[in-house]
Image (cartoon, rainbow, N blue to C red; front, side):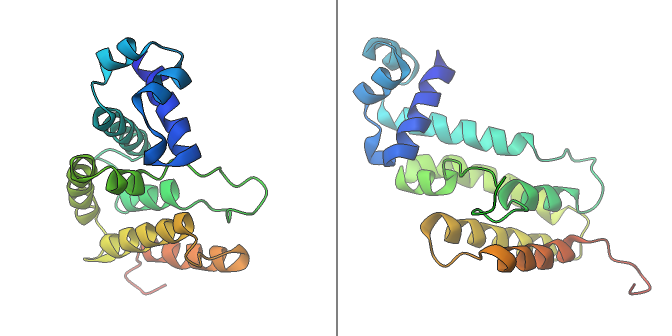
Length: 180
């Protein structure tokens, strides 16, 4: 039942943002009683935290383990965040619930869920075997990119999307000692 409730809350978030999440609306969308919802999530805060945790877990599930080759974690960060295809192109993946914006809109208690994971992820990025600062630069570029896309702040489109994606890709490419 928890997953059904969280699925319903995600639908409400996509439709209307954090303000659309009300206990009665979430229960109705999930097809459960309000009491059943409250058994699993005693407040709106708990609902939004639950969605953020689940979205973060999904993101983390596509990231490689600590025994991955150099650059693999950074590459997975890029691939999981910025699709190869520009959003308007045929076959581009649909937009997901914007976990960072959801966390920020949910208040400090929700944002803390994301902050904790980001600290862990940054440690992984720092230890990813790339030259110092490269993984952090990629993370900052990726985070800024998807934020611009979500907020409609002149995100790269079409050929610009592909060029920018290639530039970020090149940062992660294996470095050869002979410069080739």
